[in-house]
Length: 328
Image 1 (spheres, rainbow, N blue to C red):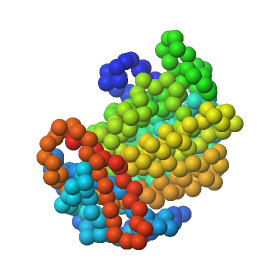
Image 2 (spheres, helix red, strand yellow):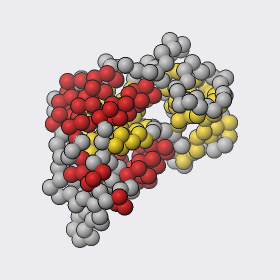
Image 3 (cartoon, rainbow, N blue to C red):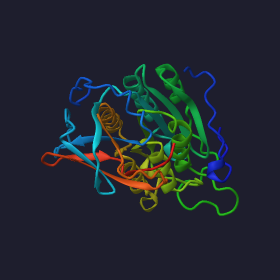
């Protein structure tokens, strides 16, 4: 269990688990045409991971350096590297909402989540499992063991003992509820920040936050600093909420779009949940990485806006909105 003393930067490190060891419709991956080990050698090199879809919403494979352009703060950048990423190691975080509103859908999330991890996590990849409710708990530290990840998902359980449900939180005492933004912040800063390669946080939640010390913009910034995309699978027992109380869609849409991930609304339907995980799997295995040395050489911590355009009728690029120019 993780305590949450204020302020946010003073939060204690997540405690690792003691026993943690060190049919898709997507297009077929292209052979790896150049090594990627050199991508991180230049500390000023900016890596931009993105997916491309056509106007029908299908993933577009086999683009090359001449097909796409990258701009930073509207200034075109010269690409040093452009690769179709199907082989670079992947770091995944599963963030599971275990608040009272999820009681009816948690078993479904566990079963489908286990199947997803068993398919996706290969020997060179790593994943962790974290739950959040009135606390944030690391159920399994980074590992490539499907067995340990499955066990972690299985042991997640609803903790509604101090949850308040819909409506405002109490104004006296320490606010407690569903610490969604705290969970994203901690996952990004304490688990993702030191990892290299492609990184994604997958939230299984109704999108409602209650009681986090972290604001949504702080959680988004933490994910951007760690270069982690956020995918949110919106799954909820909607009967738990009055219609006017449910605002999870808008907040999760903001978080996913600004980090280069995506929001998928699964309702409380098992088939939709399976399809959501399949879509995420396809996108993670069919990405591009463009790398460039920024024409702005100041490492001043400022936020730089990114945009990627690819040639073709109706091409849509899914990419994070920007990055922070932080010195190493």
